[in-house]
Amino acid sequence: MSAIVSLQVKNGNKNINLSLIDDKLSFELNMKSANNNPISIPARNILYIALDKTKDTCIRINVLVPKDKLTLKLKEFSFQVIDEESTQSWIKAVNSTAYKDAKQAKHFKVFVNPFGGSGKAVKIFNQSVKPIFDAAGCTYDVTMTEFSNHANNAKEVVKNLNLKAYDAIVTVSGDGIIHEIINGLLSRDDALEIDIPIGTIPAGSGNALSICLLGNDHGVSVTHATLNVIKGVPMKIDTCSVTQGNEKYFAFMTLNYGILADGDISTDHLRWMKNFRFFLGTVQALFGNRNYDCELAMKIAEDNIVRIKQNYNEVYDSSILDMKDKPRTLINKYGTVNDPIPRGWTILNDDGYIFYASKVPWVTRNNMVFPFALPSDGLIDLMMIKRNKVSKIKVANICSEAFENGSHVNMKELKSTPD
Ligand SMILES: Nc1ncnc2c1ncn2[C@@H]1O[C@H](COP(=O)(O)OP(=O)(O)OP(=O)(O)O)[C@@H](O)[C@H]1O
Image (cartoon, rainbow, N blue to C red; front, side, top):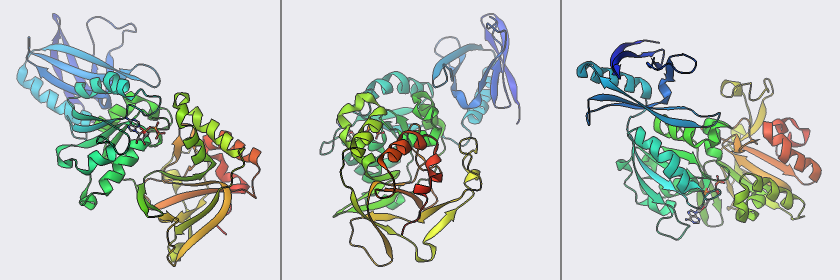
């Protein structure tokens, strides 16, 4: 770690030093802080440092500091400049350390879903996201989304969006709007050339993508997600094509049929319950005695029908999952549903409670259904619970407890590979 030469500025009538050492910006204010320690801010939390010539020439430092375990809050420090030239070059050096490989002062296309989650997305954007974007020097065009068949439906808007005008698309919503955006982008003539990143701020019910990106806690934190949108470096996520009847669409997270899907759809009117609605809906569907006949066609590479996925501990911290030496089976490649089945595809034909395929580990907060799913390995993790193999009580237990830490992958009932 290299230290950057300190900069001398004035705080009132006293001189103080601002220095960036080991990726931390440190300085001592004249008024001693309660514990007498100098102020120390990780470079990652620096949003923007700029010269402000509106009054006396001063240096403005916008940062995020911890408010509580889940929230960051905006703070601005301002000091009088002593020497403008050295201040300019210090600012340039610190801003570039603060952003590393990420572009500074990005321009975003933002989609806010006023209906998502418990209906707080507009407030979340105006009160929490916007001030942080502003403090980071980011600019944005905002679309309030509308339901399908309306002009401001996210899928329709991105179909004709000039993508070159933006550094990223940002959603202030749940995963549904991201799904619409991905499907809108992939329906364009230039689909194969598109490489615009999509950033997400959690304002829906499940927010699985945000949780998978930032973890079970920070994934539901608007301020941490906003910082990630500003400073994150893009990563790739596989998309899977799904055909149902004549309709083809693209999935980037989960494909779901059975009680979990039913439980989500049937509790749409209970959004105020937040995450709890999924559990309630699932239990209702489980004890509702519906049959879920299903024919799933999975395209499976012939020489690679089932392969063992290993080395997952390289990716996931073993403190999250202690499953060393327990590789599991995965089914390879993309799948389609209810399509005329070409030769070489494997058909899973069953009546069960859950048919669940995923590209991501967490499906909602505290629900790690696919502990070994990786975003861009070209594989889909598939989980099925068959009706004749598992009791309802056991299914309820899996959904309420085992999903929390992923321990269901070791249950013998879920161990079998397709017949
Ligand atoms: N103005 C609107 N009024 C009603 N519905 C809307 C509006 N804008 C978008 N929608 C619809 O809201 C649906 C849900 O959106 P979103 O994913 O943001 O929230 P969610 O379902 O609560 O979150 P999650 O997907 O994380 O569970 C989308 O399918 C979208 O078509």
